[in-house]
Amino acid sequence: MGTMLLVEALLVCVVALPVGRGMWRARGATSRLSKELPGFVLLIFSTLALTGLFWYLVGHEALPLQQLDPFALRYERDCLGGIVLTLEVGVWLTLVVGALGYLLGGLPSMASALLALGGMMGGALCLAAIAGRIPLVGLDVLVLGVGVWLLGLLGVSYIGWRGRTRSISPLAWSWTAFYGLTVLLAFVIGRLGVWLILLPAVLVFCWLLYVYSGLLLPIETAQDHWQAWRSLLTFALGTNFPFYVIEDWHTRDRHEETLPQPRVAGDPYRRFFSGPGIILNDAAHAAVLWDSLQYRVAPPGLNFTRPFEQVFAAVDLRPQLRNATIEAETADGIVTHTLVFMPQRIAMGQQPLQLGASYPYAEDAVLRAVCDNAFLQHHFTRQENLAEEKLEPISWDSLAQMLAPPILREVILARRCDELHESGTARVEIAQEFVRRLREQLAQVGITLVGGGISNIKVPPEIIEQRLASWEAKWQRDIEARMGEEEAEILKKLDPIWMEAQLDVYTELARILKQASDLDLDLDTIALQLVDALGTMPMKQKNVQDLPTFMWMLMRQGRMQEGGDGNEEA
Image 1: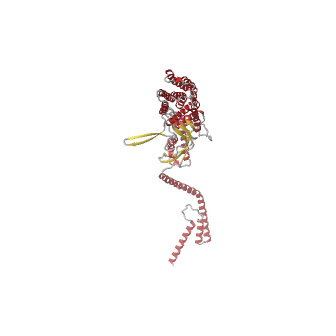
Image 2: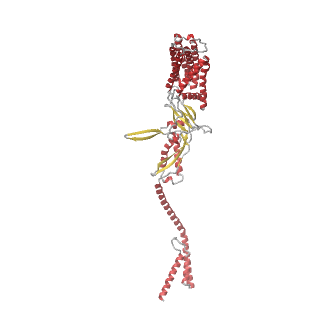
Image 3: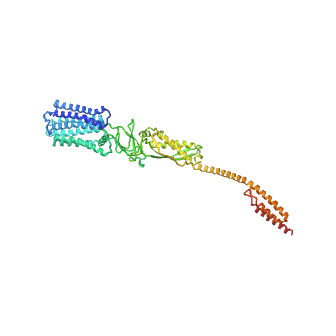
Protein backbone atom coordinates (compact mmCIF):
# COMPACT_ATOMS: atom_id res chain seq x y z
CA MET A 1 0.00 0.00 0.00
CA GLY A 2 2.91 2.35 0.71
CA THR A 3 4.19 1.79 -2.82
CA MET A 4 0.74 2.54 -4.21
CA LEU A 5 0.56 5.79 -2.32
CA LEU A 6 4.01 6.74 -3.61
CA VAL A 7 2.87 6.09 -7.17
CA GLU A 8 -0.16 8.30 -6.65
CA ALA A 9 2.06 11.00 -5.18
CA LEU A 10 4.35 10.89 -8.21
CA LEU A 11 1.33 11.04 -10.49
CA VAL A 12 0.16 14.17 -8.65
CA CYS A 13 3.58 15.71 -9.11
CA VAL A 14 3.46 15.02 -12.86
CA VAL A 15 -0.01 16.59 -13.20
CA ALA A 16 1.16 19.61 -11.20
CA LEU A 17 3.17 21.05 -14.10
CA PRO A 18 0.32 21.48 -16.63
CA VAL A 19 -1.91 22.67 -13.81
CA GLY A 20 0.71 25.32 -13.02
CA ARG A 21 0.72 26.45 -16.64
CA GLY A 22 -3.05 26.73 -16.54
CA MET A 23 -2.84 28.84 -13.39
CA TRP A 24 -0.35 31.10 -15.15
CA ARG A 25 -2.85 31.74 -17.92
CA ALA A 26 -5.60 32.38 -15.40
CA ARG A 27 -3.57 34.96 -13.46
CA GLY A 28 -2.17 36.57 -16.61
CA ALA A 29 1.57 36.31 -15.89
CA THR A 30 3.84 38.11 -18.34
CA SER A 31 7.24 36.33 -18.28
CA ARG A 32 8.43 32.81 -18.98
CA LEU A 33 9.77 32.47 -15.46
CA SER A 34 6.39 33.29 -13.98
CA LYS A 35 4.86 30.89 -16.51
CA GLU A 36 6.84 27.91 -15.21
CA LEU A 37 7.22 28.96 -11.58
CA PRO A 38 3.73 28.06 -10.23
CA GLY A 39 3.84 24.48 -11.53
CA PHE A 40 7.45 24.06 -10.43
CA VAL A 41 6.77 25.34 -6.92
CA LEU A 42 3.67 23.19 -6.59
CA LEU A 43 5.66 20.20 -7.81
CA ILE A 44 8.45 20.79 -5.25
CA PHE A 45 5.99 21.25 -2.40
CA SER A 46 4.09 18.11 -3.29
CA THR A 47 7.22 16.00 -3.83
CA LEU A 48 8.95 17.04 -0.62
CA ALA A 49 5.88 16.72 1.57
CA LEU A 50 4.68 13.42 0.19
CA THR A 51 8.16 11.81 -0.12
CA GLY A 52 8.97 12.72 3.46
CA LEU A 53 5.60 11.40 4.60
CA PHE A 54 5.93 8.03 2.93
CA TRP A 55 9.58 7.74 3.87
CA TYR A 56 8.45 7.94 7.48
CA LEU A 57 5.61 5.47 6.95
CA VAL A 58 7.33 2.83 4.86
CA GLY A 59 10.95 3.15 5.95
CA HIS A 60 10.37 3.28 9.70
CA GLU A 61 7.27 1.07 9.75
CA ALA A 62 5.39 3.40 12.05
CA LEU A 63 2.21 1.87 10.67
CA PRO A 64 1.98 -1.65 9.22
CA LEU A 65 0.80 -0.54 5.77
CA GLN A 66 2.58 -3.51 4.21
CA GLN A 67 -0.26 -5.73 5.43
CA LEU A 68 -2.79 -4.02 3.14
CA ASP A 69 -3.46 -5.04 -0.44
CA PRO A 70 -2.60 -2.09 -2.69
CA PHE A 71 -5.17 -3.16 -5.31
CA ALA A 72 -8.05 -3.70 -2.91
CA LEU A 73 -11.22 -1.85 -3.94
CA ARG A 74 -12.49 -1.36 -0.39
CA TYR A 75 -11.01 0.27 2.66
CA GLU A 76 -10.66 -1.73 5.83
CA ARG A 77 -13.03 -0.55 8.52
CA ASP A 78 -10.31 -0.05 11.07
CA CYS A 79 -7.63 2.46 11.94
CA LEU A 80 -5.37 1.41 9.04
CA GLY A 81 -8.19 1.77 6.52
CA GLY A 82 -8.99 5.22 7.90
CA ILE A 83 -5.40 6.45 7.63
CA VAL A 84 -5.06 5.06 4.09
CA LEU A 85 -8.26 6.91 3.09
CA THR A 86 -6.97 10.09 4.69
CA LEU A 87 -3.59 9.87 2.96
CA GLU A 88 -5.00 8.93 -0.43
CA VAL A 89 -7.56 11.76 -0.44
CA GLY A 90 -4.94 14.14 0.94
CA VAL A 91 -2.52 13.30 -1.90
CA TRP A 92 -5.02 14.33 -4.55
CA LEU A 93 -6.28 17.30 -2.55
CA THR A 94 -2.71 18.62 -2.57
CA LEU A 95 -3.13 19.42 -6.24
CA VAL A 96 -6.59 21.03 -5.86
CA VAL A 97 -5.75 22.98 -2.69
CA GLY A 98 -2.44 24.22 -4.11
CA ALA A 99 -4.09 25.35 -7.36
CA LEU A 100 -6.91 27.15 -5.56
CA GLY A 101 -4.48 28.79 -3.17
CA TYR A 102 -2.35 30.07 -6.03
CA LEU A 103 -5.34 31.38 -7.95
CA LEU A 104 -6.74 33.17 -4.93
CA GLY A 105 -3.56 34.76 -3.65
CA GLY A 106 -0.47 33.69 -5.50
CA LEU A 107 2.45 31.82 -3.99
CA PRO A 108 1.95 33.00 -0.37
CA SER A 109 -1.63 31.72 -0.34
CA MET A 110 -0.65 28.47 -2.02
CA ALA A 111 2.08 27.88 0.56
CA SER A 112 -0.35 28.56 3.41
CA ALA A 113 -2.95 26.19 1.96
CA LEU A 114 -0.43 23.39 1.47
CA LEU A 115 0.92 23.99 4.96
CA ALA A 116 -2.56 23.62 6.41
CA LEU A 117 -3.18 20.44 4.42
CA GLY A 118 0.22 19.00 5.34
CA GLY A 119 -0.37 19.80 8.99
CA MET A 120 -3.74 18.03 8.88
CA MET A 121 -2.19 14.93 7.29
CA GLY A 122 0.67 14.92 9.78
CA GLY A 123 -1.80 15.24 12.63
CA ALA A 124 -3.85 12.40 11.14
CA LEU A 125 -0.75 10.17 11.20
CA CYS A 126 -0.15 10.97 14.83
CA LEU A 127 -3.78 10.23 15.65
CA ALA A 128 -3.58 6.95 13.73
CA ALA A 129 -0.50 5.92 15.70
CA ILE A 130 -2.30 6.72 18.97
CA ALA A 131 -5.65 5.24 17.97
CA GLY A 132 -4.00 2.01 16.82
CA ARG A 133 -3.05 1.29 20.42
CA ILE A 134 -6.65 1.49 21.68
CA PRO A 135 -7.77 -2.09 22.51
CA LEU A 136 -11.50 -1.51 22.08
CA VAL A 137 -12.78 -2.47 18.64
CA GLY A 138 -14.38 0.45 16.82
CA LEU A 139 -13.18 3.05 19.28
CA ASP A 140 -9.95 3.52 17.38
CA VAL A 141 -11.88 4.30 14.17
CA LEU A 142 -14.13 6.76 16.05
CA VAL A 143 -11.15 8.52 17.61
CA LEU A 144 -9.39 8.75 14.26
CA GLY A 145 -12.53 9.95 12.43
CA VAL A 146 -13.40 12.66 14.96
CA GLY A 147 -9.74 13.65 15.22
CA VAL A 148 -9.36 14.09 11.45
CA TRP A 149 -12.56 16.16 11.34
CA LEU A 150 -11.28 18.39 14.14
CA LEU A 151 -7.90 18.69 12.44
CA GLY A 152 -9.72 19.81 9.29
CA LEU A 153 -11.59 22.46 11.28
CA LEU A 154 -8.28 23.59 12.70
CA GLY A 155 -6.85 23.82 9.18
CA VAL A 156 -9.72 25.91 7.81
CA SER A 157 -9.49 28.11 10.91
CA TYR A 158 -5.83 28.69 10.07
CA ILE A 159 -6.78 29.61 6.50
CA GLY A 160 -9.48 31.95 7.79
CA TRP A 161 -7.01 33.58 10.16
CA ARG A 162 -4.42 34.06 7.42
CA GLY A 163 -7.01 35.44 5.06
CA ARG A 164 -8.77 37.55 7.74
CA THR A 165 -12.15 36.29 6.60
CA ARG A 166 -15.37 37.83 7.85
CA SER A 167 -16.42 34.42 9.16
CA ILE A 168 -15.06 30.89 9.04
CA SER A 169 -18.54 29.39 8.95
CA PRO A 170 -18.56 28.84 5.13
CA LEU A 171 -15.20 27.10 5.32
CA ALA A 172 -16.23 25.02 8.33
CA TRP A 173 -19.51 23.88 6.76
CA SER A 174 -17.79 23.15 3.44
CA TRP A 175 -15.17 21.00 5.20
CA THR A 176 -17.81 19.17 7.21
CA ALA A 177 -19.87 18.41 4.07
CA PHE A 178 -16.81 17.24 2.16
CA TYR A 179 -15.62 15.08 5.08
CA GLY A 180 -19.02 13.47 5.53
CA LEU A 181 -19.35 12.75 1.80
CA THR A 182 -15.86 11.23 1.76
CA VAL A 183 -16.56 8.87 4.66
CA LEU A 184 -19.90 7.88 3.16
CA LEU A 185 -18.51 7.07 -0.28
CA ALA A 186 -15.39 5.38 1.07
CA PHE A 187 -17.09 2.89 3.37
CA VAL A 188 -20.21 2.31 1.25
CA ILE A 189 -18.78 2.14 -2.29
CA GLY A 190 -15.06 1.90 -1.64
CA ARG A 191 -12.05 3.24 -3.49
CA LEU A 192 -13.97 3.50 -6.73
CA GLY A 193 -16.37 5.89 -5.03
CA VAL A 194 -13.43 8.07 -3.99
CA TRP A 195 -11.74 8.04 -7.39
CA LEU A 196 -14.80 8.15 -9.65
CA ILE A 197 -17.28 10.15 -7.59
CA LEU A 198 -15.63 12.20 -4.85
CA LEU A 199 -12.63 13.66 -6.68
CA PRO A 200 -14.56 14.30 -9.93
CA ALA A 201 -17.31 15.91 -7.82
CA VAL A 202 -14.75 18.39 -6.47
CA LEU A 203 -13.69 19.28 -10.02
CA VAL A 204 -17.31 19.52 -11.20
CA PHE A 205 -18.14 21.79 -8.28
CA CYS A 206 -15.27 24.12 -9.19
CA TRP A 207 -16.36 24.04 -12.84
CA LEU A 208 -19.96 24.88 -11.93
CA LEU A 209 -18.74 27.83 -9.90
CA TYR A 210 -16.73 28.91 -12.93
CA VAL A 211 -19.78 28.72 -15.19
CA TYR A 212 -22.04 30.42 -12.65
CA SER A 213 -19.60 33.31 -12.22
CA GLY A 214 -19.84 33.95 -15.97
CA LEU A 215 -23.62 34.19 -15.69
CA LEU A 216 -23.50 36.68 -12.82
CA LEU A 217 -21.31 39.29 -14.49
CA PRO A 218 -21.12 40.71 -18.04
CA ILE A 219 -17.76 39.17 -18.92
CA GLU A 220 -16.19 39.57 -22.36
CA THR A 221 -12.87 37.71 -22.25
CA ALA A 222 -11.52 34.49 -20.74
CA GLN A 223 -9.32 36.52 -18.42
CA ASP A 224 -12.41 38.32 -17.11
CA HIS A 225 -14.07 34.94 -16.60
CA TRP A 226 -11.22 33.75 -14.35
CA GLN A 227 -11.35 37.02 -12.43
CA ALA A 228 -15.11 36.66 -11.95
CA TRP A 229 -14.58 33.12 -10.65
CA ARG A 230 -11.97 34.35 -8.18
CA SER A 231 -14.33 37.11 -7.04
CA LEU A 232 -17.10 34.59 -6.43
CA LEU A 233 -14.83 32.28 -4.41
CA THR A 234 -13.37 35.07 -2.29
CA PHE A 235 -16.86 36.45 -1.70
CA ALA A 236 -17.90 33.05 -0.41
CA LEU A 237 -14.79 32.95 1.81
CA GLY A 238 -15.30 36.53 3.01
CA THR A 239 -11.85 37.66 1.80
CA ASN A 240 -12.96 39.68 -1.21
CA PHE A 241 -11.90 43.20 -2.11
CA PRO A 242 -14.71 45.82 -2.18
CA PHE A 243 -17.43 45.51 -4.85
CA TYR A 244 -18.77 48.75 -6.39
CA VAL A 245 -21.65 49.57 -8.71
CA ILE A 246 -21.16 53.13 -9.96
CA GLU A 247 -24.15 54.79 -11.56
CA ASP A 248 -26.13 57.91 -10.61
CA TRP A 249 -25.00 57.65 -7.00
CA HIS A 250 -24.57 61.38 -6.30
CA THR A 251 -28.25 62.04 -5.62
CA ARG A 252 -29.87 64.77 -3.56
CA ASP A 253 -29.93 62.52 -0.51
CA ARG A 254 -26.21 61.71 -0.89
CA HIS A 255 -24.87 65.01 -2.19
CA GLU A 256 -22.43 65.34 0.71
CA GLU A 257 -20.66 62.09 -0.15
CA THR A 258 -17.50 62.38 -2.22
CA LEU A 259 -17.21 58.71 -3.17
CA PRO A 260 -19.77 55.95 -3.78
CA GLN A 261 -20.18 53.39 -1.05
CA PRO A 262 -19.30 49.75 -1.89
CA ARG A 263 -22.15 47.34 -2.45
CA VAL A 264 -20.08 44.63 -0.74
CA ALA A 265 -17.52 45.67 1.83
CA GLY A 266 -14.02 44.32 1.62
CA ASP A 267 -10.38 44.96 2.45
CA PRO A 268 -8.04 45.62 -0.51
CA TYR A 269 -5.00 45.08 1.74
CA ARG A 270 -5.56 41.37 2.32
CA ARG A 271 -2.71 39.22 1.06
CA PHE A 272 -3.87 35.64 1.62
CA PHE A 273 -6.75 33.94 -0.21
CA SER A 274 -8.04 37.33 -1.35
CA GLY A 275 -9.56 38.01 -4.69
CA PRO A 276 -10.13 40.90 -7.01
CA GLY A 277 -12.70 43.53 -6.31
CA ILE A 278 -15.41 44.45 -8.77
CA ILE A 279 -16.23 47.87 -10.22
CA LEU A 280 -19.28 47.86 -12.48
CA ASN A 281 -19.68 51.25 -14.16
CA ASP A 282 -22.67 52.28 -16.21
CA ALA A 283 -22.23 53.87 -19.65
CA ALA A 284 -21.93 57.38 -18.20
CA HIS A 285 -19.31 56.78 -15.51
CA ALA A 286 -15.67 55.88 -15.13
CA ALA A 287 -13.62 55.33 -11.98
CA VAL A 288 -10.10 56.38 -11.08
CA LEU A 289 -8.26 53.76 -8.99
CA TRP A 290 -5.22 54.37 -6.78
CA ASP A 291 -2.87 51.87 -5.12
CA SER A 292 -0.77 54.49 -3.25
CA LEU A 293 1.79 54.49 -6.08
CA GLN A 294 -0.03 55.11 -9.34
CA TYR A 295 -3.42 55.84 -10.82
CA ARG A 296 -5.37 54.03 -13.49
CA VAL A 297 -8.76 54.53 -15.10
CA ALA A 298 -11.51 51.90 -14.89
CA PRO A 299 -13.66 52.51 -18.02
CA PRO A 300 -17.42 52.04 -18.29
CA GLY A 301 -18.35 48.40 -17.93
CA LEU A 302 -16.93 45.59 -15.79
CA ASN A 303 -13.56 46.09 -14.11
CA PHE A 304 -11.60 44.09 -11.55
CA THR A 305 -9.40 45.74 -8.95
CA ARG A 306 -5.91 44.69 -7.99
CA PRO A 307 -4.38 44.41 -4.51
CA PHE A 308 -4.19 47.71 -2.63
CA GLU A 309 -6.35 49.54 -5.20
CA GLN A 310 -9.07 51.84 -3.94
CA VAL A 311 -11.59 54.09 -5.68
CA PHE A 312 -10.02 57.53 -5.80
CA ALA A 313 -12.82 59.25 -7.74
CA ALA A 314 -15.99 58.44 -9.66
CA VAL A 315 -16.13 60.50 -12.86
CA ASP A 316 -19.41 61.38 -14.57
CA LEU A 317 -18.67 61.50 -18.31
CA ARG A 318 -21.84 63.40 -19.21
CA PRO A 319 -21.88 67.20 -19.62
CA GLN A 320 -22.08 68.89 -16.23
CA LEU A 321 -23.78 72.28 -15.74
CA ARG A 322 -22.26 74.48 -13.05
CA ASN A 323 -23.17 78.05 -12.13
CA ALA A 324 -22.00 80.67 -9.70
CA THR A 325 -22.83 84.24 -8.73
CA ILE A 326 -19.62 86.27 -8.95
CA GLU A 327 -19.00 89.60 -7.27
CA ALA A 328 -16.74 91.96 -9.23
CA GLU A 329 -15.80 95.66 -9.26
CA THR A 330 -15.75 97.98 -12.24
CA ALA A 331 -12.92 100.39 -13.02
CA ASP A 332 -14.72 103.15 -11.10
CA GLY A 333 -15.24 100.98 -7.98
CA ILE A 334 -18.87 99.91 -8.49
CA VAL A 335 -19.63 96.43 -7.10
CA THR A 336 -21.52 94.16 -9.52
CA HIS A 337 -23.07 90.69 -9.21
CA THR A 338 -23.25 88.37 -12.21
CA LEU A 339 -24.67 84.88 -12.57
CA VAL A 340 -22.45 82.74 -14.83
CA PHE A 341 -23.28 79.27 -16.15
CA MET A 342 -20.63 76.83 -17.39
CA PRO A 343 -21.56 73.50 -19.04
CA GLN A 344 -18.49 71.25 -19.08
CA ARG A 345 -17.36 67.66 -19.58
CA ILE A 346 -14.24 65.51 -19.62
CA ALA A 347 -12.33 66.02 -22.87
CA MET A 348 -13.19 63.35 -25.46
CA GLY A 349 -9.96 63.53 -27.42
CA GLN A 350 -10.40 62.01 -30.88
CA GLN A 351 -13.20 59.64 -29.89
CA PRO A 352 -16.59 60.36 -31.48
CA LEU A 353 -19.90 60.14 -29.70
CA GLN A 354 -21.68 57.00 -30.91
CA LEU A 355 -25.24 55.83 -30.40
CA GLY A 356 -25.41 52.67 -28.29
CA ALA A 357 -21.89 53.08 -26.89
CA SER A 358 -20.65 54.54 -23.63
CA TYR A 359 -19.73 58.19 -23.38
CA PRO A 360 -16.30 58.77 -24.94
CA TYR A 361 -13.40 60.19 -22.97
CA ALA A 362 -9.64 60.63 -23.16
CA GLU A 363 -7.83 58.69 -20.46
CA ASP A 364 -5.09 61.30 -20.06
CA ALA A 365 -7.78 63.98 -19.70
CA VAL A 366 -9.40 62.01 -16.86
CA LEU A 367 -6.07 61.65 -15.04
CA ARG A 368 -5.25 65.34 -15.51
CA ALA A 369 -8.67 66.48 -14.32
CA VAL A 370 -8.86 64.17 -11.31
CA CYS A 371 -5.27 63.51 -10.24
CA ASP A 372 -2.96 66.23 -11.54
CA ASN A 373 -4.74 69.31 -10.22
CA ALA A 374 -3.35 70.55 -6.92
CA PHE A 375 -6.26 72.74 -5.85
CA LEU A 376 -7.26 72.45 -2.22
CA GLN A 377 -10.03 74.00 -0.18
CA HIS A 378 -9.10 75.21 3.28
CA HIS A 379 -11.52 74.88 6.19
CA PHE A 380 -10.53 76.65 9.40
CA THR A 381 -12.11 75.99 12.77
CA ARG A 382 -11.16 77.67 16.00
CA GLN A 383 -11.68 76.44 19.51
CA GLU A 384 -10.26 77.56 22.82
CA ASN A 385 -6.57 78.34 22.19
CA LEU A 386 -6.61 75.95 19.26
CA ALA A 387 -6.96 76.48 15.52
CA GLU A 388 -7.56 73.56 13.21
CA GLU A 389 -7.14 73.55 9.46
CA LYS A 390 -8.74 70.92 7.26
CA LEU A 391 -7.61 70.53 3.66
CA GLU A 392 -10.09 69.14 1.17
CA PRO A 393 -9.23 68.57 -2.50
CA ILE A 394 -11.51 70.27 -4.99
CA SER A 395 -13.26 67.78 -7.25
CA TRP A 396 -12.78 68.05 -11.00
CA ASP A 397 -16.35 69.14 -11.69
CA SER A 398 -15.95 72.11 -9.33
CA LEU A 399 -12.80 73.46 -11.00
CA ALA A 400 -14.84 75.72 -13.28
CA GLN A 401 -16.50 77.34 -10.27
CA MET A 402 -13.05 77.98 -8.82
CA LEU A 403 -11.42 79.32 -12.00
CA ALA A 404 -14.34 81.47 -13.21
CA PRO A 405 -14.39 84.26 -10.52
CA PRO A 406 -10.88 85.70 -11.12
CA ILE A 407 -11.42 85.63 -14.89
CA LEU A 408 -14.73 87.53 -14.76
CA ARG A 409 -13.37 90.01 -12.20
CA GLU A 410 -10.46 90.81 -14.50
CA VAL A 411 -12.76 91.29 -17.50
CA ILE A 412 -15.16 93.61 -15.65
CA LEU A 413 -12.37 95.55 -13.97
CA ALA A 414 -11.29 96.85 -17.39
CA ARG A 415 -14.62 98.72 -17.84
CA ARG A 416 -16.42 101.52 -16.05
CA CYS A 417 -19.97 101.06 -14.84
CA ASP A 418 -21.43 103.26 -17.58
CA GLU A 419 -19.61 101.23 -20.23
CA LEU A 420 -21.39 98.08 -19.12
CA HIS A 421 -24.73 99.55 -20.26
CA GLU A 422 -23.85 102.10 -22.91
CA SER A 423 -24.31 99.75 -25.85
CA GLY A 424 -26.22 96.54 -26.43
CA THR A 425 -23.03 94.63 -27.25
CA ALA A 426 -21.14 95.28 -24.00
CA ARG A 427 -22.57 92.25 -22.18
CA VAL A 428 -22.03 90.06 -25.25
CA GLU A 429 -18.39 91.12 -25.49
CA ILE A 430 -17.85 90.44 -21.78
CA ALA A 431 -19.47 87.00 -22.08
CA GLN A 432 -17.36 86.06 -25.11
CA GLU A 433 -14.13 87.16 -23.44
CA PHE A 434 -15.06 85.32 -20.22
CA VAL A 435 -15.91 82.06 -22.03
CA ARG A 436 -12.74 82.21 -24.15
CA ARG A 437 -10.42 82.61 -21.16
CA LEU A 438 -12.22 80.01 -19.07
CA ARG A 439 -12.13 77.49 -21.94
CA GLU A 440 -8.36 77.93 -22.27
CA GLN A 441 -7.73 77.34 -18.56
CA LEU A 442 -10.06 74.33 -18.31
CA ALA A 443 -8.42 72.72 -21.35
CA GLN A 444 -5.14 72.64 -19.42
CA VAL A 445 -6.71 70.35 -16.80
CA GLY A 446 -8.47 68.02 -19.26
CA ILE A 447 -11.93 69.62 -19.20
CA THR A 448 -13.84 70.85 -22.23
CA LEU A 449 -16.18 73.83 -21.85
CA VAL A 450 -19.10 73.06 -24.15
CA GLY A 451 -20.85 76.42 -23.76
CA GLY A 452 -21.25 79.14 -21.20
CA GLY A 453 -22.46 82.68 -20.70
CA ILE A 454 -23.48 85.32 -18.20
CA SER A 455 -26.72 86.87 -17.02
CA ASN A 456 -27.41 90.58 -16.59
CA ILE A 457 -24.64 92.40 -14.78
CA LYS A 458 -26.44 93.70 -11.69
CA VAL A 459 -25.43 96.74 -9.64
CA PRO A 460 -26.87 97.95 -6.28
CA PRO A 461 -30.28 99.75 -6.46
CA GLU A 462 -28.91 103.03 -5.10
CA ILE A 463 -26.30 103.06 -7.85
CA ILE A 464 -29.06 102.51 -10.40
CA GLU A 465 -31.07 105.47 -9.05
CA GLN A 466 -27.99 107.67 -9.02
CA ARG A 467 -27.11 106.70 -12.56
CA LEU A 468 -30.67 107.29 -13.75
CA ALA A 469 -30.70 110.79 -12.23
CA SER A 470 -27.34 111.55 -13.82
CA TRP A 471 -28.47 110.24 -17.18
CA GLU A 472 -31.76 112.22 -16.92
CA ALA A 473 -29.89 115.49 -16.29
CA LYS A 474 -27.57 114.75 -19.16
CA TRP A 475 -30.43 113.92 -21.46
CA GLN A 476 -32.26 117.16 -20.44
CA ARG A 477 -29.18 119.24 -21.27
CA ASP A 478 -28.86 117.46 -24.57
CA ILE A 479 -32.55 118.11 -25.34
CA GLU A 480 -32.33 121.82 -24.50
CA ALA A 481 -29.14 122.24 -26.50
CA ARG A 482 -30.72 120.47 -29.45
CA MET A 483 -33.86 122.62 -29.23
CA GLY A 484 -31.75 125.78 -29.08
CA GLU A 485 -29.87 124.66 -32.15
CA GLU A 486 -33.14 123.99 -33.97
CA GLU A 487 -34.59 127.42 -33.04
CA ALA A 488 -31.43 129.17 -34.15
CA GLU A 489 -31.58 127.27 -37.41
CA ILE A 490 -35.24 128.30 -37.90
CA LEU A 491 -34.55 131.94 -37.15
CA LYS A 492 -31.62 131.87 -39.52
CA LYS A 493 -33.90 130.63 -42.25
CA LEU A 494 -36.65 133.22 -41.41
CA ASP A 495 -34.38 136.29 -41.64
CA PRO A 496 -34.63 136.64 -45.46
CA ILE A 497 -38.38 136.12 -45.33
CA TRP A 498 -38.70 138.76 -42.64
CA MET A 499 -36.70 141.32 -44.60
CA GLU A 500 -38.78 140.65 -47.72
CA ALA A 501 -42.01 141.02 -45.72
CA GLN A 502 -40.82 144.33 -44.26
CA LEU A 503 -40.16 145.63 -47.72
CA ASP A 504 -43.64 144.62 -48.82
CA VAL A 505 -45.16 146.33 -45.77
CA TYR A 506 -43.27 149.53 -46.41
CA THR A 507 -44.42 149.53 -50.02
CA GLU A 508 -48.03 148.92 -49.02
CA LEU A 509 -47.90 151.70 -46.40
CA ALA A 510 -46.62 154.12 -48.96
CA ARG A 511 -49.43 153.16 -51.32
CA ILE A 512 -52.07 153.56 -48.58
CA LEU A 513 -50.82 156.98 -47.54
CA LYS A 514 -50.73 158.15 -51.13
CA GLN A 515 -54.27 156.85 -51.75
CA ALA A 516 -55.52 158.49 -48.54
CA SER A 517 -54.19 161.85 -49.60
CA ASP A 518 -55.63 161.53 -53.06
CA LEU A 519 -59.08 160.25 -52.02
CA ASP A 520 -59.40 162.11 -48.73
CA LEU A 521 -60.35 158.93 -46.77
CA ASP A 522 -61.49 159.00 -43.17
CA LEU A 523 -59.31 157.80 -40.30
CA ASP A 524 -61.13 154.45 -39.79
CA THR A 525 -60.60 153.38 -43.37
CA ILE A 526 -56.95 154.34 -43.24
CA ALA A 527 -56.50 152.48 -39.97
CA LEU A 528 -58.11 149.32 -41.36
CA GLN A 529 -55.82 149.35 -44.37
CA LEU A 530 -52.75 149.91 -42.14
CA VAL A 531 -53.71 147.01 -39.92
CA ASP A 532 -54.23 144.78 -42.92
CA ALA A 533 -50.83 145.71 -44.25
CA LEU A 534 -49.10 145.09 -40.92
CA GLY A 535 -50.77 141.66 -40.65
CA THR A 536 -48.71 140.38 -43.55
CA MET A 537 -45.47 140.60 -41.46
CA PRO A 538 -44.29 137.24 -39.96
CA MET A 539 -43.70 136.82 -36.23
CA LYS A 540 -40.06 136.50 -35.19
CA GLN A 541 -40.79 135.20 -31.69
CA LYS A 542 -43.40 132.72 -30.66
CA ASN A 543 -44.37 134.66 -27.52
CA VAL A 544 -45.35 137.84 -29.48
CA GLN A 545 -49.11 138.45 -29.79
CA ASP A 546 -50.76 138.36 -33.20
CA LEU A 547 -50.29 141.84 -34.73
CA PRO A 548 -53.75 142.49 -36.28
CA THR A 549 -55.53 141.38 -33.12
CA PHE A 550 -53.21 143.59 -31.07
CA MET A 551 -53.88 146.58 -33.31
CA TRP A 552 -57.67 146.15 -33.13
CA MET A 553 -57.47 146.09 -29.34
CA LEU A 554 -55.50 149.34 -29.34
CA MET A 555 -58.04 150.98 -31.67
CA ARG A 556 -60.97 149.95 -29.44
CA GLN A 557 -59.21 151.33 -26.42
CA GLY A 558 -58.51 154.57 -28.35
CA ARG A 559 -62.16 154.97 -29.40
CA MET A 560 -63.39 154.35 -25.90
CA GLN A 561 -61.06 157.02 -24.61
CA GLU A 562 -62.31 159.51 -27.32
CA GLY A 563 -65.92 158.75 -26.49
CA GLY A 564 -65.23 159.37 -22.84
CA ASP A 565 -63.52 162.68 -23.52
CA GLY A 566 -66.43 163.83 -25.74
CA ASN A 567 -68.93 163.08 -23.03
CA GLU A 568 -66.92 165.06 -20.52
CA GLU A 569 -66.78 168.05 -22.85
CA ALA A 570 -70.50 167.87 -23.42
